[in-house]
Length: 222
Ligand code: SF4
Image 1 (tube, rainbow, N blue to C red):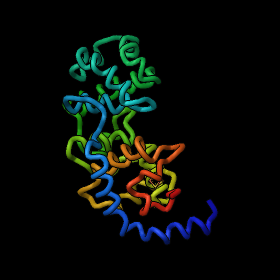
Image 2 (cartoon, helix red, strand yellow; image 1 turned 90 degrees about the horizontal axis):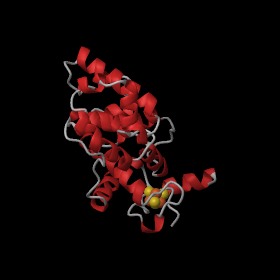
Image 3 (cartoon, rainbow, N blue to C red; image 1 turned 60 degrees about the vertical axis):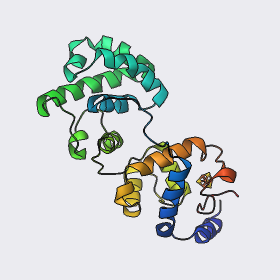
C-alpha cells in the first residue's frame, strides 16, 4: 500500500478516538462468546495454563492440563517430582524443558515470597520466572484485577490494521491502546480482537467482505 493511499484510507475512516467506541460495540455484538479459551479452576491453574500457552494452541494446553491438574494441585507438587517427570507431563505444549524450568522457579518463588498464593499486581507477577508482561496481564485481568491490555499476535495485527497504533513493539502498542480504549474495556478488548482475528481478520487473508468493521478500518479491502 502506498503512503498516499494509507493517508487517504485513514482520512476516510476518521480519527481513531471516534472509531474506538463503535469498534468495541460491534465486536462485542459479533463475538458475544469472546472469553479466554483456556480451562482452569483457580488462580494457580490459570497461571500455569497461561505459562504453558506460549508458542502453542489453547486446545493443546487444555488437553495437557486436564491430566496435569489432577496430579499437580499445589505449588509444592511441581517441586516434588523430578524435573524430567514434569517435562514429560507437559511435553506436547512444546519448549517443555524451558517451561518446566520456569514452572518450578515460579512455584519456588510463590512459596518463598507469596505464601504459596498467586499475586495480582503486575509488578509482582512479572518477577516470576517465565512470566512476561503478556502473561501477567492475562492472569491479572482474569482475576478481575486488570492493570493493562494484553497484546498478543492477534491484538498486534488487528490494532495495526485498524490504525489504532503505528508501533510494532508490544509495549508501545499497549501504551497506545491504554490511551485509546476506555478503562472499563481493558479486560474484554483483547478477547474481542483475538476472536475477531481468529474468525474474520485472519493473518494471511482477512475476510473484509464479511467484517463488521469494514467501514471503520483503513485496511479494508472492500
Ligand atoms: S476490514 Fe479487513 S483488515 Fe479491517 S478489521 Fe476487518 S477483516 Fe481486518
